[in-house]
Image 1 (cartoon, helix red, strand yellow):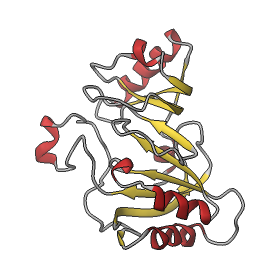
Image 2 (cartoon, rainbow, N blue to C red):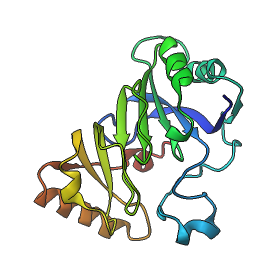
Image 3 (tube, rainbow, N blue to C red):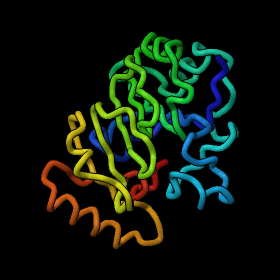
Image 4 (cartoon, one colour):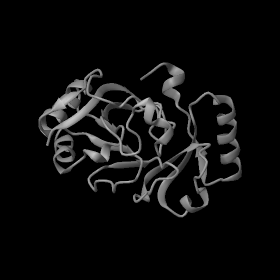
Length: 210
């Protein structure tokens, strides 16, 4: 299988339970809830995405002919040292491309594999850390994992139903748009009345990290 990757980069995880952890990010191209083109945003299921996942022209991106080549690129970005290797597979929607071969190849390189998905495709069982960020109006089939991250406010989201899903951590994160301050307050208010949830902030943006 050929893997289409927008970008690969080394950074610190900026949000969620693993915030602050050194990680290689692999951003796969493509998504099943939005084309990535602005002219399609208003009609998409997910209309608030703040990420460019179109094409393979980003830093470190490209089309990788096989899993070994992609895993080696990830290892090259990590650099020296095999301790606590951590890779985050994201997108777009990474489960459109994640398969047995890439999971096995990354594990062979010594990486713990995390993934952030919209949950509309079942997560690969070999992924070590499953983060699901549900989008209102989509059919979420992956209702278990390590981390549920609800971007807020998101009209149409059923938080009551989500609380019955099988996740170790429930996070609410302010939507990053023009209503920034109001969204932060809405997420704080959400966490204050729902003690099962805790606030997650995008610290990488505050720090100027990718």
